[in-house]
Image 1: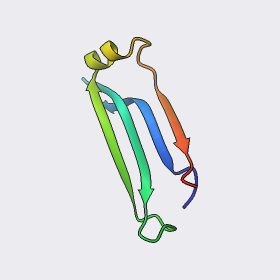
Image 2 (image 1 turned 30 degrees about the horizontal axis):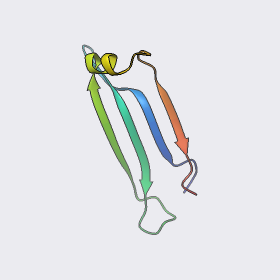
Image 3 (image 1 turned 30 degrees about the vertical axis):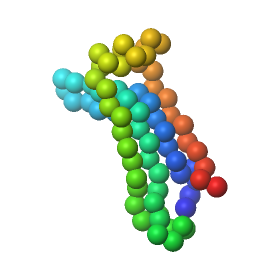
Length: 70
């Protein structure tokens, strides 16, 4: 598999014309043989904008981090 493989992001995870959602998201490849990626596993924690503002005094920042699985 190519590196980096594990992603963790924080910030905007949902957007429509009238709505925004903020939260955290992870994704990583899955593989039956440990070498060839067969799919992707991902999970998202979502908060509406009011909850995000209350829990994040620094404001609505976005960040992403990439990690190696080696």
